[in-house]
Amino acid sequence: MKVEFVSAPLPVTTSPVAHVVNQDSLDATLDPVLAEGAKASRFTGKTGQLHEGFVSRDGTVVRVALAGAGEKGAKDRIASLERAGAAITAKYIASGESAVTIDLSDAGLGAAEAAAVILGARLRGWRYDIYRTKLPADQKASLTTIRVAGAPEGTEAAWEVEAALADGVELTRELVTEPANIIYPESFVERVRPRVEAAGIKVRVLDEAEMKALGMGALLGVAQGSVRPPRLLVMEWNGGAPGAKPTAFVGKGVTFDTGGISIKPAAGMEDMKWDMGGAGAVAGAMLAIAQRKAKANIVAVCGLVENMPDGNAQRPGDVVTTMSGQTVEVINTDAEGRLVLCDAITWVQKEYSPTAVIDLATLTGAIIISLGHEHGGIYSNDDGLAAKLMAAGTASGDTLWRMPMGPAYDKLIDSPIADMKNVGPREGGSTTAAQFIQRYVDKGTPWAHLDIAGMVWASKPGATWDKGATGFGVRVLDRFVRDSLEG
Image 1 (cartoon, helix red, strand yellow):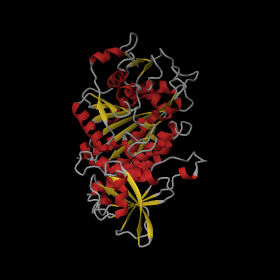
Image 2 (cartoon, rainbow, N blue to C red):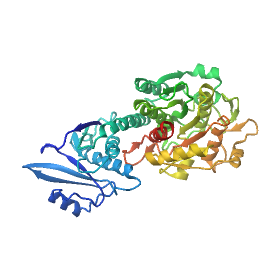
Image 3 (cartoon, rainbow, N blue to C red):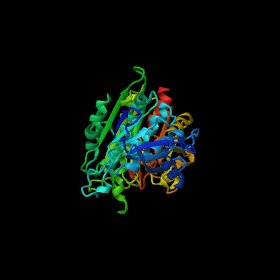
Image 4 (cartoon, helix red, strand yellow):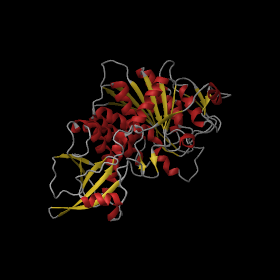
């Protein structure tokens, strides 16, 4: 979706035109027919409301929309403004109109608030229809341009920052949406590499032989049943103080997860193309951070594998040796994400000695049972890091809920024949997964694990996304960098 800034006042022929309306604040100068229509449809400017009408201006019929932005002083003001912009796009995305003008001249917004409206409008306009060849005309996306008129001073500069964020979210949505025959470990790298390198990110890729030489037995054990070779994608952004240690982002990138020998039920298995949502979020966040030239040092690592039930696949009961030297009894081959993460986390600590490690993964179905599709779960060994990430989640809309950890849970993954097993009992499944990962975090290193299994894919439209990939994870990482590393 293209965003253009245009001058106000608008030509009479401009149509459609959208206005952002605060709750219970219909403009007294509004066309009386439009105002009466809004009142009749019970439009009051509540967050997410939208009313459309037609007015006559100098003999020309103009299509006009009113988008509700909620209460002016509300705590969630920015989120409400994003929803106002998103409601405008949702109305016109398949309307036959190629452009809509958002007139902010009478909205009383600041630059950051105006940018939030534009961000919501752009994010809601993302669709991925490249494989759909027989869409009816009235379902095809027609809207290609958002024009912004009457924006307050500073909006264009504020939008440049948010446009970088939008690029990152859209990259993540693209990666998560693509089917597994298109995005697999090698092609994930090929898709991401040119995008992030163009933004100034240094890229390094480890292949199977290099990982074997490093002793990554856990990650390679997951990959051994697939004809698709694994990859470790490393992205380095040095925008902070020269020589300062980076913060590490680590993403689970299981490009398709059958469950391996512990195979999943057939119903719904097609969804497992998005089991690389953690890696997708990390890649998108890095693109956003680099494009807006964040003043921070970040290294990102994506462990990329495909989990398949081949004759060479890992078996339940196998014991693997991780890069850290610790051994794991693989009880369930469908608990593979933690095996990928543990080697990726060990590698980034040995290579970079990061100031903190944050991993993102669509790790457990248990987190969906706990939190539904409203929050990602966060586990951490550091209260300060956890608080910063939760605050970033609240501010960005990628909301997180802190979950418990402790020695009692840790005992549940002790193995009788190895250092640990890769699953505990059915109860507390998300926590025992986090306890497993924590065993690979160096003593004294702040660490947080974000289990986002319930958040990367939506079965119905949300505030700023359509059905499908949400891009969850990009915004919380970007906001964390803004507030805690750059601030």
